[in-house]
Length: 268
Image 1 (cartoon, rainbow, N blue to C red):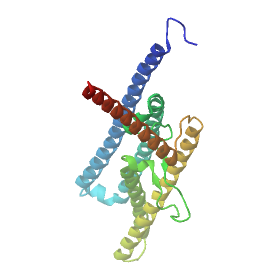
Image 2: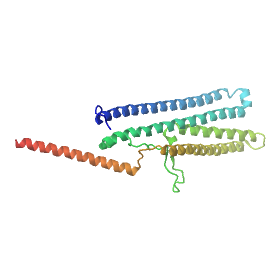
Image 3: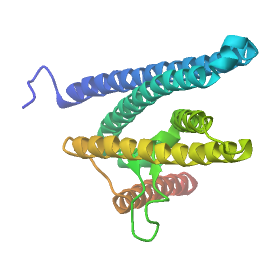
Image 4: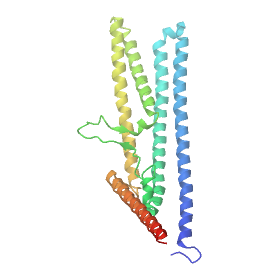
């Protein structure tokens, strides 16, 4: 019940102001997370470039040449561990950002319910189940190859690729070092190293993708239990058509009122 000194309109206005402030706060925080995430990725890429450039500048040193396999393996493992940690942190930041975007949909829903035709002007849906953490589906027709992940929205593909290459390099160097004690030709050793690099890198790519799919799926299922205003594609289409009809009806009423006023003026 509204008290006499606080009519419904005043209370409604206070809620509007609060939700607008809250909405802006959520968006500001999501932008901050985006900035932190980008800085972490950029730092890692800078470090990889510095290590590669530094290794190239000392490769002619006799000590490095005599221990090149061990030094290369050590550097690749170091960068790989750091890359894995950076990837996991990036995924966590991405999930936090998506969570904030979905929460902001509740504020849009409030204003939509107050003014249904505002749906025609909203940049995003008035729902808290979009965007999805894990998009696409693993249907039998595509056999999972066409699944699109949250990781394709940011710098995660770069990290995933570098990590896969580093794991492949470790396998390649270990293979070539092991074959250095045999009588196989240099070409055979090189071919074996390349095969291990491709197979190992490809296998680790799939492993990383599987881990990320699992994390995102768990987060999606967890968030669903806290959804209040989920909308399917068909539901959104229905709401949009209703909003358009509401808008058209309002415009027709304004036009009829204007025509009636013009006719009255002419009759005078």
